[in-house]
Image (cartoon, rainbow, N blue to C red):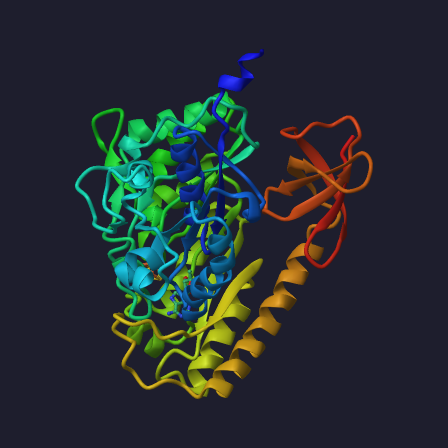
Length: 444
Ligand code: 5AD
Ligand code: SF4
């Protein structure tokens, strides 16, 4: 007989990730932690031995999605009583045991700061609900990232949590206060990713540009200095970061956009509103004018930078004039793309009790804003036609010989490149623009 008879059958783990890129990163780390326990990932929920839902709490709809998905898991659990169902992420943090009370199919609930204990929870060696903010750093307790080859673009969390307390936002409560990971851990993880074929790293944090720490030279480093250090890593061709607060755009970070060639000309800088009255009510601690002046300075440093942002319409107290001020700001900045949301009241946040804007009015404002942002996005994309840009190939396209990659500006680009491989970073002349992607040709 072969040894196969002795090899334990791997258990299968299905992970569904909701929400932001930080959750995508956390899901990867949880998969790695469970990998050390003999679990392999599956894309097919029906064959899973464990289902993990990594949740988002930012807007009500995102949180409600969890409960409808859990409802849909009931028949699977009835069929497979050994199936383990776990809830991770920010809804887990915010609602804790309420989740198990409402949905008894759930076996364990783990917050974003405690998921290094997930394997122990699954083994029954830790409580079923873990949502504290432990002193220890979860990253110290997670297995080293597996020595397998990786996709050419990866996320790396460098900062977590938020001390800004915008009046609408749950993040300071679900992710806790701002914590920066130490330089040597970040550099080690970055080097390790590069050794495994990664050429582009997106640094993640809820307030990533608020990152700071003791540097390799013994001095206090800010985020710009960290980016410079990463720029010196051989084999790391592209650096991105998200998401940032305008008040943490230090001079050294702005000048890094001029000085560090690997830092891509793309910046996501949420402003939320263009009305000073609303910005004050949101506790944003900046004005429309200071944001616009900041944008000028960033564009002085890197004239070809593409800017993107987040907006909330219908924040309590928002008038037509306030909304117009947002449209005016958008017209002045000219964004490459942006996310806009209708305000969603979140329990526990300062704005929760405030009188809401009429829902139909907010819907209309959202439509107006999105129409303007879509026009700007289309113009930005069409402006790429004729330019030659770097494109990092991430996967083969559907057509024979076709590759799909990301441009410097994060647009998806389709290129006929029969000789090319995933992970190639090539110069591409942009020849066409479709609704959500660009077409390109290999530059001579
Ligand atoms: N309602 C609507 N949008 C929100 N965001 C955060 N909290 C809320 C809320 N309560 C948006 C902000 C933020 C993005 C991640 O989500 O625009 O930048
Ligand atoms: Fe939320 Fe504001 Fe912190 Fe961003 S800066 S995570 S919107 S509280």
